[in-house]
Image (cartoon, rainbow, N blue to C red; front, side, top):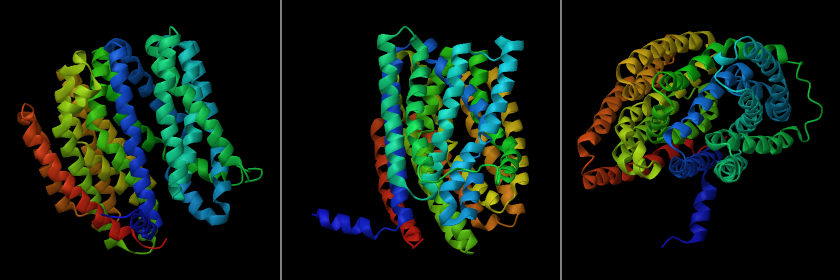
Length: 476
């Protein structure tokens, strides 16, 4: 039997990126688990029509947030922190956060004008519009805090903040449902209140000990970089949110609620893979700067295998997961989980390839590729939803991410970095994982074969984790 001392010694030998990757991933899985439990709770408290108000609100939240932040907390912030060096990183983060006041105020002014000229076009009441912008401001502070933690491998602060928000959001929402008359709007107001409280704590941490920020010192350069990537960020959010907006407008809030449950199950591996990708991106930048392209290629191959295995496992466990999350009134959307799971691998590849291209300062090419992919995916989404309703919205998810992945690889290859991705092996892996995901449909009535396949995948994932650990166990 392994002793506690042995486990501690083994954990201590792991280098910082590995420890951070493990904690980031476990945090993401725990947060997703809490969200799953809260979803199961709220679907039983609210009918689909009331539950559907929340995804409609979050779709608008995502679109407006792009204009209000210009995503200055993404790759633009990472590059500025690299330029600032260890001494100036804290100041770089706070000054970048202060600069978000520019796009935020501009977006608020435009939104106010639109609300005055044509109130019905926005689809939100005045109180919910106020909640929208308050939550955007709070989420922006949290996004900068999370970005700083990821860049510096500050996994424990990140875990505390993320899990606190994940735990408190459903509790506050339940209290609002119990003691107020907000109804379905409690799902909107509750998380917003928790985000504001968390943002206050995170903001104090970001500004403590950095002196007086001077955001205009390099503000022009940062804002230009953010503005250049604005179409890219808008394209990404459009790929994710336009299907929800179209489905809600053309089919109804009840259909959107059911589609949202299917997406919550089908995209569950994305949260874990996104956590891994987030901690891997700074590592990849350092390896590419050192010319260690083969190491990046090897790790990306392992990450793709892990993402494919997770997507197959979720596809085969989807009947049990869907039954856990939703009552009988939502069950007709359960088959929609399968097409959604097909997007997981393409999503991971897109994030990785885009990170490499942005590191090479190919922002214009990345933006053009993302905008083209978004235009294609939105067109496909309109056609599929008009023809097939909820099923069309579900199939639009893998189609959209496939467009993003293909065009991202085209940008990567054109820039001379196509060799960091094993394209032949990746295509074969995608075909294999898609076949295994679709195989879940005839196996739905037979739980034992599905559970056996999931157990085999779990064993393989453990072996995969030890392989990728060897690549990351290096001094930083």
